[in-house]
Amino acid sequence: MACLAGASADLSRMVLETAKMLDREASTSESAAEIESCFDRLWPLHRSLTGEGVRRTHDILGEIVPLNRIEVPSGTVVFDWTVPKEWVVRQAYLVDPNGKRILDVADSNLHLVNYAVPFRGRLSRQELDAHLYSLPDQPDAVPYVTSYYQPRWGFCLSQRQRDALPDGEYQVLVDTDHIDGAMTISEAVLPGDTAQEVLISTYTCHPSMANNELSGPLAATFLARRIAGWRRRRLTYRFVFVPETIGAIAYLSLRGEHLKRHVAAGYVVTCVGLDQPFTYQRSQRHDTLADRAALHVLRSSALPHEVRDFHPTGSDERQYCSPGFDLPVGSLLRGPYTQYPEYHTSLDNKNLISFDALRGTIDLLEATCRALDVNATYRSLAPFGEPNLGKRGLYPSVGGKRANMDHRQRARATLWLVNQANGERDLLTIAQRSGMPLELLSDIAQECVDKGLFEISVDESKAGKE
Image 1 (tube, rainbow, N blue to C red):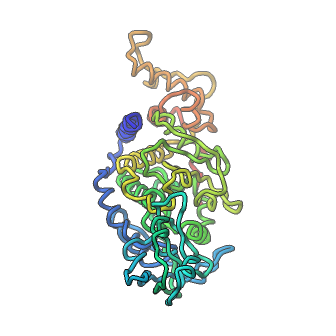
Image 2: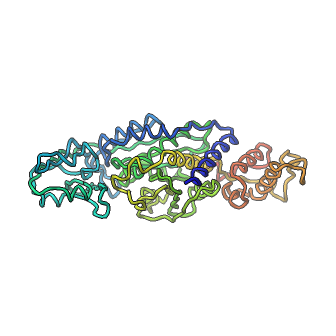
Image 3: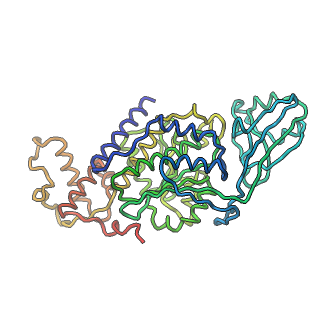
């Protein structure tokens, strides 16, 4: 993994250099130890679609960046769905024929089927078997099992534990309840100079899983803190923390029309904690601003990565990209769901992930947001032939081999800009075509505006406004 570590360091330098070039404050940067400390506080909380574990999770994340809490009452109709009752877990365990308490939810959140209905009674080993869940092909893993919308109870255990259960009578206690409560959603909106928005969405509903749960909200929260520290934001950044599927649908029922008017790019952040190459999953429309910015940063950083097309069996991007909204939302992963063997099991734990890798994910996300923030569309005010750059101080006065490399690169970038600035091509397009650094193009474009040679495209300046 040495190549990944080196590439990640290069990405960190790229983020810092971009900030300097744009005359912005360097963002507030977290250490791997700080991320780990927050992880340790979040790990034991019993998360689900609803409940106090989710609220406590949002409380902790809210210490890093302030969050606005939204409680959606049970029974609320959100498009084709209904917000379920709030799940309350008091205790749940078995007592085996020898009087030993086993499969106690107090020992592991995963032992209890998520959203289990209450049950108290005595069952034979054979009767109990219908309520047990294990993985024969992964004998040491406890599976993560849910039953959100069908009433059932059950316990999850490793196959080795299951095989060792003795015959006899078992006492069963599932002390849970489903009450008229609420589903918790949180958001943080960091205003920019324009009403155009970047949406960052993640989920907080899985109990005690590291990559498939906590890596996403940790990356999103520390990213929000970094962006909050920028001296200036051209775009507005919206961070959303929801339970997967039903939460994103509920959020769209509340904010969907606003998002359709304002979101320029968005990303679902999940499964980003493994020390593996990045995977970028494109939006439904395949070549949106979100896709172009993420792929520009991945390619420019020289990080190994895979690009895959949109697929409707993914995470919440399938809600944001559903036909009624079709938002420009892609997804960033680092150890994609279903593609690593520990997925949805107790083996997806702290030992599996890398906090240095997670910090590298935050670097990549920030670099992508910076790319979005500097991207703009310019129109040349002297479009007939090549403008006289020298009289405006936009071209080196010494040419040929005597000019140093920086001057030659800047001159080439300037020529690309004045040739391409037709009011339709944005900087990402020009960067891709020219091979010039996006940050350099942005710096020169602003200088051209200051010298009266460029103007921001009218369409660009109006984009995202009411």
